[in-house]
Image (cartoon, rainbow, N blue to C red; front, side, top):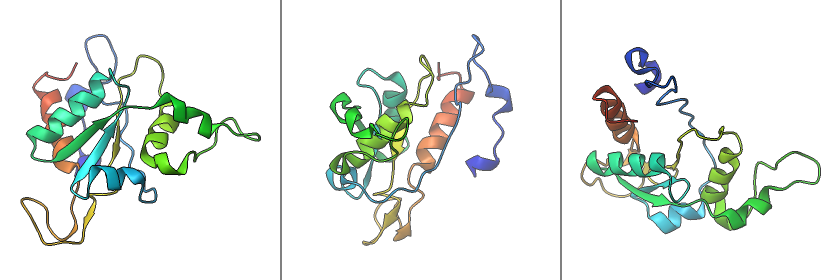
Length: 158
């Protein structure tokens, strides 16, 4: 649904920056964040003082989805060092989702607000339906992303 939507009226902020620069869907293996966050909650990973991370987590709460704001632990960054490449695409195994956030941070220009949504855990539900969550594919974070689009349309994203 969002992939077909054109953000033409909200393409840039007053200072020329895009409020939503890119939305990428990655399909990694299940990570320890799945276990830590629980099967019903996705992780929103970003700098501890990251307004984008907090904005996404707030949008999740307001849309009825559970999201857990998590930091980017800088001590795990060294696990992405590589003897043969500029950066490895995998690092500390037990920090999967957090290391993925550190990896993605390497490609975000300074000053660009961003957050990494790790929704591998709640994307597929094997238990009984509950609330808005069906059995099977859940559409995790779709309501959060729609809420963020609504916030942008109403001028609340800056």
